[in-house]
Length: 415
Image (cartoon, rainbow, N blue to C red; front, top):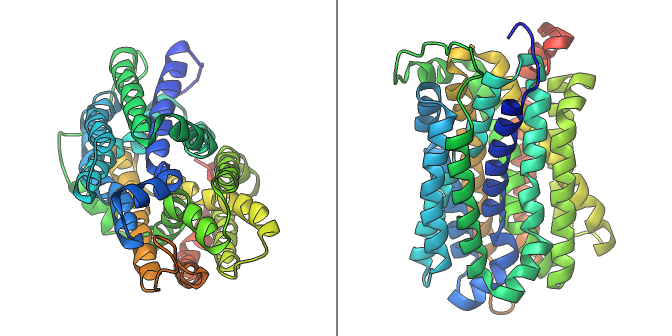
């Protein structure tokens, strides 16, 4: 776009797609608070709880590549709300779930349905906002959207205590329906008068171009462990860690999850500014490095006094991973933006599935000290392993980060 003027249409696009991502974050995070209810009511073990919760991210990841092709072909106006209808069915099924199989199937459907929330918004914003504003707008998108995790902390705990955890998902389904209809009715794929780029229909050539590049395989592993571990811990294990390893009660857990989520929100909002100020890859490297070290510190099971600041830092530094999608946008042409972002996002969301389930498997190797309760050492082992793997992935990413920092002009760094 040669010039840019913010209009009501821009605002509608931003608000509605941000609301959709808010719902995605809410659904992915809800099980962290209701985990004790699910364990008690359905008799789930740690590995079963981890698998059932993480299946959201497995189907979410598997859907990324076809969604990327669909976004580049039909556009977010149609793809995103169509997927939301699948999420609605999953939320209703989860509300009526009476077995592990039903809950896992429901989480799988919700994962598919929410798989286009973030990448659909990013694709839409790449068409509605100029490149130099992309990092800032996308950072605000993820910051506001991540407030869904805030609602999935203390407020969800209070709502669930008053009305039951099943009501949470019925209300979520109703709100999702409203947003889906609003996106179809009140947004367009492109600004008025803007001719869409020709995509030539459905093709996997863009995906092949992305995955055959060396840069993709340098950026994908760090996205797996950075994005994956933030979402895996925030969405499930941050709660049981406090319950089991530090013997906190539900209110204490909810408050610390609220702090973690609030810090993540601030981190997402600040990410664009930090990238402009200090450099895109510099912020990614420092943020992801600190994020891994904080995992190791949590593995040491510090005094409960330090949990609040550590959870705050965990949330804030973990959000540096969102800039990996901005880095991806720099590396590939606009005609395959949707496919490039979704290909990298497969690893972030797929990593969440692997890590969320994998942590449960590690924890389950330790004997329960009470029904549904595992020893602190189980969590320490899991966190030490994820910290080490995160640092290895960061080391693999460093050459690409260094090359980008040297070759990208300052004004281009945060596109």
